[in-house]
Image 1 (spheres, rainbow, N blue to C red):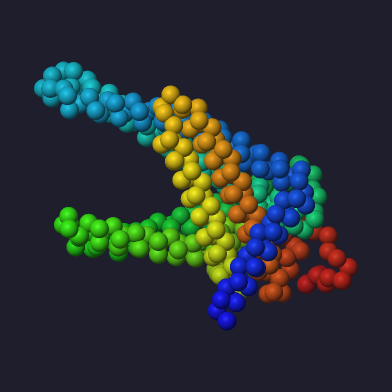
Image 2: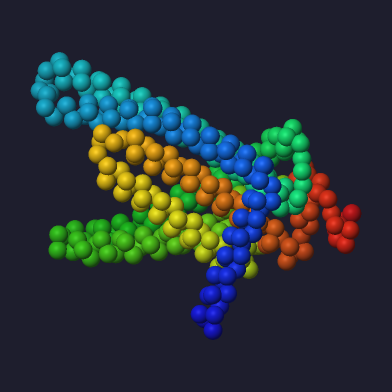
Length: 323
């Protein structure tokens, strides 16, 4: 019976992925435009990292490696030390800019993808101007919800460190190194699995904060309330997406190790392809959670026809609550 239930659950997961695939094909022009928009933004961010942050890290590393070879009492040492500080300050500024732009791109991408997916799911066509207005009106929701999710994620990571710290202290000898690695590996797997379980509420709350006038703690509470019947399904979806991203990252790492430094173009090409696939996977994940949102809301008798600032066409047999 347990095996039958698992296969039934797996079949439902495949059905949800297929529903998301159909969602992409239902309005190819809109969804492909959203994908290109998301990919261009991530590509520009990647170029900024390659052209700015990576050279700064290289320069900082080279300058740090020179310090041990110099006399600390010499003027050259002080000049080199000041150069290291300047390189580090430049790296910090560039990293802050990168993180800020990355956060803005992430929020903007979430708004575009979720709204486009919802409109496609409900078979609604809106003008480009109205679509832009819709996005601009709903930016506050995912921004606030993302802030709370970041706090919960930070607390979860600190909790993991608190658990793992006593294990590190009790396994300082070389003889127990293998035991230490095994314990950390098991704890890390459990940590990631439970994080995937928590992410079912986190991702769904992001969709809710975009499509409803609910955000922050309220969005998280709403997501926890409506997701109860679909948690196993979404949990398996998160594991699937996580394994897919991890596998792609390992392929890029293997390509980087296999080629010579003179063949850096192959590494750049592999990284670019990884970025494109990762962008599509992230977009598909949000599309899947948008589909899950509608599926979660419908059993609860919610009026999913009315989303914020959008009037959807209702079928004649459907009665509007409170109309």
